[in-house]
Length: 588
Image (spheres, rainbow, N blue to C red):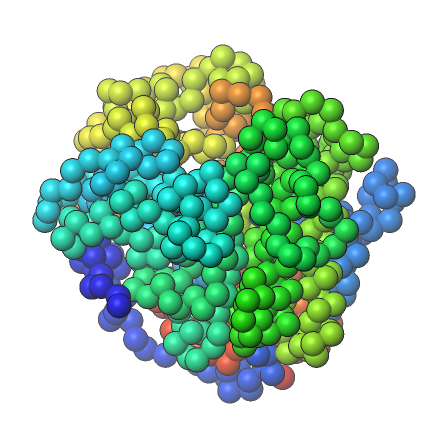
């Protein structure tokens, strides 16, 4: 049973979506009237993959694979697809807002998701301390409390287990510890599940309500968020093996696709060190393989674990983590087998992949090829729209631009500059600040915003960009924040989730005290936001769209392809999100 929506989701004046019930647009009515013959949509996020990565791997690069293309599956899909060269993710370009953009059609200002770890000025702390150290606390009813919000592995029952510590089964929503969730003081201090944290509905909710079967696979149980508010059962089949679990606890499925041998895991040095899957170029492929097998099972008309027959989903898909790990990781567990480099990432400014990143791109391409072949085998390829996207990119591509702060220059990140005089304790001494290659800052007193900005400006004033000890490129606050996200503050005049300050970094800056990675995401740079977007179906001719589009346009396009009204998405109505251009053949 769904409980009534919370104060934060219903009473904010800036989200009076219920009043926007008019038809979406005459142009879309015409598209829908033609219907498309599409009955299934396979949505794949290759996290981290840039638009230029597709160009390089489909066309070939000198010095890689003898100059021949190294992603034959994606190249083949492009031959019957529309490739969008100027597609942009959400800003911030983090996994949580990036995924929500793909499935809601909305930006963070409407959906309310800014980062996996963020802040809400109304919600109260969890009852118990999370696995990542967000302290449990009290909940004062009917007043704004204020708390860090965590929607990642820290809310699992046991984040060391692949199934998140679920009492039965292979994980999912029953892996979430409700006592580790933030609470709503305007809803009797009930815990706020990830899907109820999201302010607008999703394609999964709309399709499920229309009678479609829905499925999704992702990296945390917290990503039940894709179900949308009010009803977690909008996801008929949800699989979310915990990516940050101890790789020593890996449990392979009875069958695993492709040529990757995962029993035992190939990188036993990482297993012995009890590293998670993001610490190994090899083991991350076995982690992703769990989800690939789930997709193959669903194409075959079974549940993800093949335990029961099920309809082939109307909407289904997964995210790949392998490419993201290949872009970021500096390997920490000794020597690697041939074919891998100790450092991932790219070797030059045009996006030539390192040997380790090349392995991950080839792996993702091969895995998608298995899905395409299974669709053909089951006679489903012509009725399936395949959408290849990415929640986020990764920055920098050019390794010469990398500057890790404080690790490389002894400088200070914005959160360290401001310190306890400006930031709540949860930003500093609990699960930490929201800083990767962006810095989002929620102040303990918003009235100190001007003083905090002045301090940040002073810290970087009169320094050339190369010597900027804080890596600050631009500081957004006041009208700058309002234009992008809305007004920070409490309802009814402000949004309790909007940061007071967003620091946009210089190109290549990553806020980290270690040297275990060569890239990050979350920021606003071109490398963060310009990601792969390819829509493919046998009826489409190869075409390229060079006009700017956004990942928010994927959601209404998916509904239109399935013959559903895009305006059923609340964020689409709120923001006027359009379907993607260039797909005329798919509607005929």
